[in-house]
Amino acid sequence: MGQRVYNQDKELVLADGAAAITASGVTQVGGAAATKKVGPGRFEAVLIVDVSAIKISANDEIYTLLLQGATSDAFSTVETLVSLDLGATEVRKGGAVDSVIGRYEIPFTTEQHDTVYDWIRLYVVTDGTSETITLKAWIAERY
Image (tube, rainbow, N blue to C red):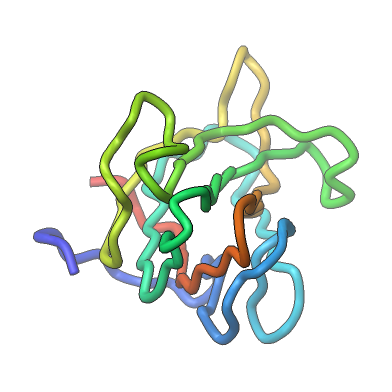
């Protein structure tokens, strides 16, 4: 999975891949929604997503992964720090190719428009016919 090797800090795991995601919501670790505090200052890292299963057979499935930031653990106000669309080419933005299993690496920072969002979570928006995706996700040190 990928050319680069990343160290995995178990405290920064956002999705453990224990169950398929079949509806929109916050990803889980150990059966509970995963939220992480990454510190009070700017944090630069890479979101690592390992997709082990993805259903696109109806050609209308789309999975939007949103790494959301917040200034408190309540996530009452969120900002999208980075997003990734996976799914069938028929519904992906710009007609991107069908998504496949494998590793996706997305660099990000917690500072957006001069605001530092020190709480983060991964939110998946699903749409389509009987959509289902299985993935593991974590945050790794940037380069």
